[in-house]
Image (tube, rainbow, N blue to C red; front, side, top):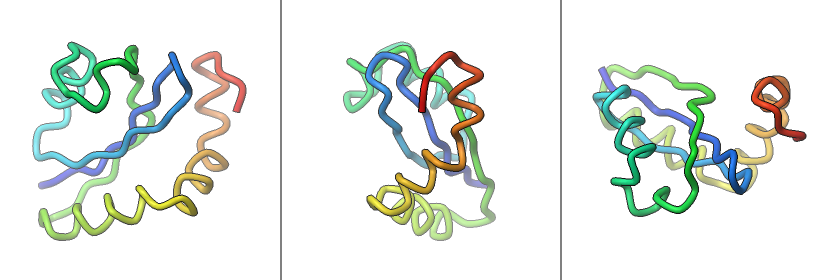
Length: 89
């Protein structure tokens, strides 16, 4: 099983989209500062994730979620979650 996940930076209000086979471990790496692209964006909150049977499917979805249109859609869909963590969407 492979997971596409969306992290949210409380610090600068940016989304990070990634994919992995080990979600808990990967999120821990992000929050420990071990991932270069999110190191300076901590703390990060896991907002949502989707499960796929193959890495190919996960990569395809990850690439889509990294487009501008998908990011706008994510922000609209996740407004309630952002309010729960104390952010104004």
